[in-house]
Length: 107
Image (cartoon, rainbow, N blue to C red; front, side, top):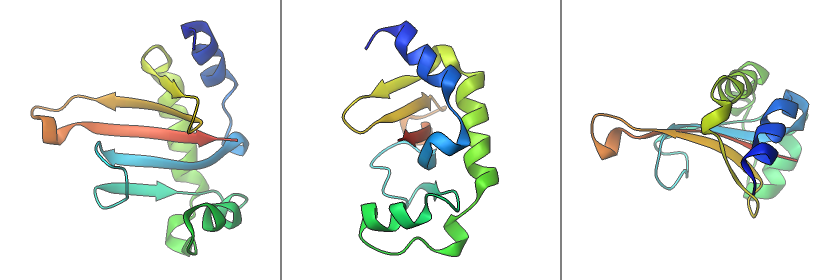
């Protein structure tokens, strides 16, 4: 996907357009090294997508908004995976195991 298209996706990104977010250590993104967050509006869909209930502790519009804000602030670094419909940034750490990921899955 062309960089301008990714930049446009980031520019147009809103909390309402996000299904779920991930913030944590990079790797498999299963949640053991980071946190998945959902908005109240996306929690039901999130439960269907992952096959088990999204817990109340995983629902936070504030955390989702923080990821959206982060991605907008780092728009030039954001990548987009068309298959998964995810906008993401990875940040290098002092060691490979310290590499961090911030991601938003979009509608």
